[in-house]
Image (cartoon, rainbow, N blue to C red):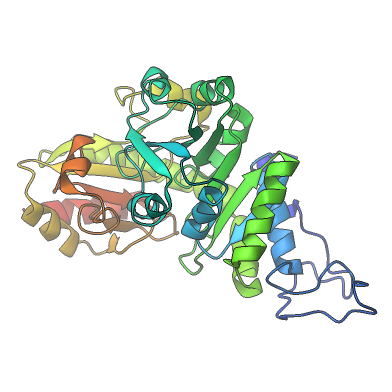
Length: 381
């Protein structure tokens, strides 16, 4: 099936009891058994739930994977991945990444003896130099949050395999519509389902997709044993959101292109970070591994004043100032004080995350209205 067909049909069957075309919300904590251990595959809803099963199967299909595993948040999914490892193990991560991931790595798991190296990943050789006998995984975001850096998935997969380590990819910014890391050799794909997959700013959820059976078995064990599982209502909402994922992503990408071009030519804007520009670092890699360039954009202001950034964001009418991204409505955020506040300033600025940087999640509204909103807000500085 092509992507749009998979988004609507993969993993989803009419309800066998009633024929309902939409997967029912199985709002139950437990399931009656005929005899101890004699049941229909469901015992307890932390372990399995039919609504969640349908969503997990659907997500696996969208990422061209075999196993989908859902969690109560994106960080819950990342937490499960790191629990694959032991004290003394080492993980190499991109140095430009979501602040919550950085916080989980450094404030939680480093306390248990897992060591993290944060390195730029534009060049695979830089990553290779950090690999040693204790390295167990490479953690990638591409595009990165919020600098929109592009990392070569094929090169990273070859590097990981040559050293016998896992490659995990946070694919949240791209979504499965734009990019499929498993196809390039990744072992684990992570999504904050909260974002583009849900698409309507009404669910918090995470997911992992893998191909390898033994790896899936370990992650499913952690999912059940640690209990960070989503409820059936949230799974239902994400299933509904995914049915329009391909349509939304086309519009997000179209609007993203329009807004990026507008900002690039604005006299009060210093830099615009969007992988669709030919002069964007690693644009050729983005063109190879992505089907489009999405609706995530970051930009900085002339003079780099945090006061100017605040003024712009306070004067938006359509770009709502809020955490998160990937919903149908346009959002803006200030990473230095919001999503990435847990990263020390000196570390943020090494990757270009300066005080005036504003991150946009361009929604599916009319692009002209969004341009007018930007023009009005920028006129206040």
